[in-house]
Image 1 (cartoon, rainbow, N blue to C red):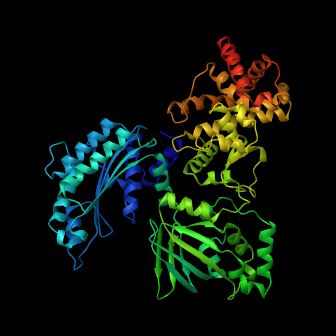
Image 2 (tube, one colour):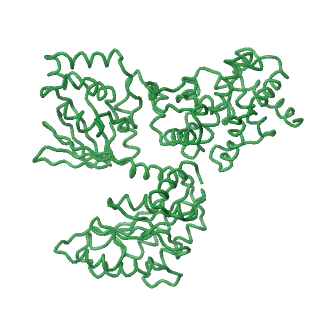
Image 3 (cartoon, rainbow, N blue to C red):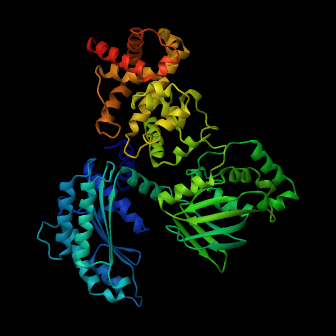
Length: 577
């Protein structure tokens, strides 16, 4: 099981005190994440999870008018109302604890769904399946009260891997969608493949909820746009903004609302000093709303009450205006009834839209192009991987991935242990994309040459961690001049590539998206973290390989030809180990 998912599953195991196998826990975890998208109340995922081998279906439930329905009696009660136009949704899941999206398994899932929707199943069915068929019959008898006169259905196929949109697999899901549509039982059919990235995002949205109710002075709405159902530009009192949006219950600033911001608070920069000066000036602070560019908030759920001029935001992120927000917080004492700020509130849950908005609202010349890698979902998962690794180790072994610029400025972390986007990409490119000669060049070249191969959705996070840890260990040896390591400092990127070969005592090509990459990295990590410092001998072997060739000049080590010659020497060398 992938390390990030494993950590999340441990949390749900503790929360509900489950005593189940790892595969069953994964089913419960997936069902909890998926059903929580449609049902906002508390529930035990056990009540929506089927028994073992139940017709290739692992999760079943109905949501009627916002309520979770798991019994026939609940369904009958839901329709015992004067209300009509009730929203009714069926949720079906299949969960595979492996990483593959296998055509055969998807076909079996399709068979199970067809059998269930026949309402007279022939495959083995447990109690939940039978109960859900009874619920379905209640719904079909009350279609006049159902929105669109038919329920909708959402089908989820989950694995712990990454969905790559391969032609045959994509077609398999399209077949499921077509087969369900043929039944004519549903007004809308959605079939979704879900991997670990999507599951992690769902889990985070459940466990890290933030909400705010903001009073507006004035506002105007913009017309609906594709995947943006509503958006508003509002004038808000600055003090109200700090109290309701920025401050947590302990009185501290909510740093989590800036997770989607490209950079963290930069402190007392010239621009931020000017904002502070404006706020401290009694006359100028009245003009703050026209002197400042304002703040942009994106939220998946926004509710405006026009009569009271209040807006409700759920799971919101401040994607532009981090510097303004923090400076307002720091200058709270100066804020008064005449200090206002312009806030743009955008409702959207579409990833591409959100990324475009963040990019467009953060296109200042002072932000480097590589900083936009921090918006990738993969960089968040890599950062999470570092955090999980740290949680299992003492502080002496901690490393930190600074996803956003200046994120750890005020943390008590040793600088040599912090890896930013640039540094980690150079290390990863050298060690696992096998291009140390490009890592040795000017850093921006990496992002031009390898821009499509960095933080790819299906990369294994362990590769980024391993390359950072290897570089950290080498830098330490350089700093203390042990084993004459400082002599090889200009070849550090080539040493990263050699290290993996010597550590495994063989040359093998590791694909960044392969499951094998994790075990391959585990072997290296154990040596790098060994108490008897096994890694020092490996570095010494790397130096000996380098010494088999004439020592390169700065220009030579930036050429692919030198790297190829070095690899040939490495292959010969490890055969003798």
